[in-house]
Image 1 (cartoon, rainbow, N blue to C red):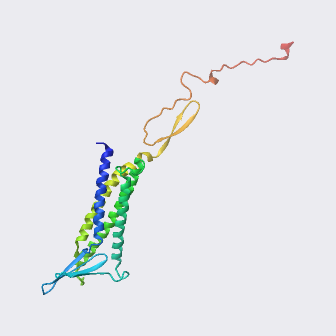
Image 2: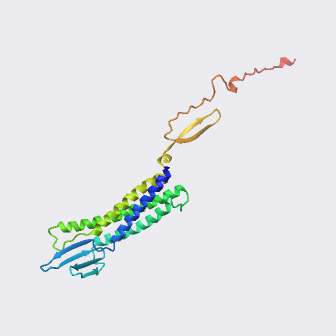
Image 3: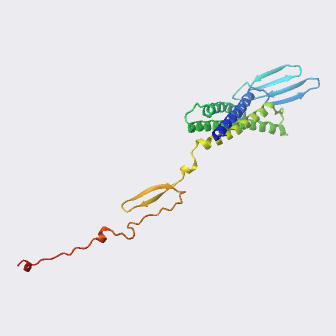
Length: 256
């Protein structure tokens, strides 16, 4: 199997992996079970409290449930605002990462040359990595906040536990990060210039009998160039081989 075919199947697998992870991350945003708490009473009824980034909900064993959005946006803590922003950024970056990867893959043939497609695919992989990073920060911070409040003995308010949506989000972000990392490795290896072309160059001089020219060679070149002498052995210059002429002088008595 050719290398290009292997890379093409690899790109398809990474794209499907990242797409599945992005769908899982998107599914957690409308889900209410980011945190939950169960409170039992004396009678045979149990109240369940659960919430997410946007609302608080309550339900009981009779089947009655009610959800209420947070009444004031400015009264919310900064932690919740940052988690909202990061979650939305994760979804947006994942969408554009999918578009760029779909355009640059070898099986689609939408782009131009192989080099251009590889660079577009690398850009899509980097976008996927940013999406996974935003999602991982969101779910990790949310988990740390819930666990720290639950284990804090001085926390007197109602304590919550980690909901199912957070675990689904962790799985989705891991899929995005793994697929984006593999995709960026292969596409970057093909699309980015190699390090050999960026090596510093040192001047190298070739001397001839008449002219002396300077050429630029790579610094890694260890080849020794022999510079021919100006005059080869057994050969003399014209000035050296010329016979000096005798100058005759004439005086007055020579013409008498």
